[in-house]
Length: 206
Image (cartoon, rainbow, N blue to C red):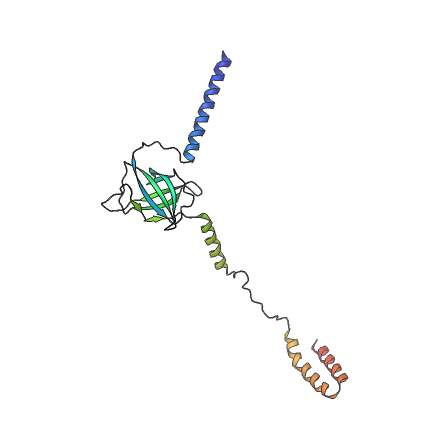
């Protein structure tokens, strides 16, 4: 009897754990929606949607006011067209702006609404062009690396110019004209003498 009660409690804990994991999985995948079915749809165009997915949240002031229904590509404007399924309880001025934001540093992306000041609200079928694209992490890293390279003064690859060698010492520079003069004078008299004079001038320079 005691063993049977323990088995029942263990089974209940396992079911609760499975239900909690399912709830977290649905919430992480933006597949959990507790709102009703009524609403209206509007479309927004973005240059870059980043990692935005269908069922992603549409938020205003941190409150979920809708969901992303679908994402398509417009081959005429070469932009992403995002269809938003808005909750019928929430209405926004038609000069409101949309921007793709990220929950935390590497969290899920969602659409944030910044309400405008117009007296006319969005209605079903409206197309929103006042949008801000997603911030791509790879682009930010690339810009950061380029700025650091410019601050350090590192030239681009392949732009280094060859500099002339400057290994000659001042004594060598002073001895060179003398050796040349001696060599020139000696070569006019005798080739053997010229060679000996050049050797003597080189030894004196050392």
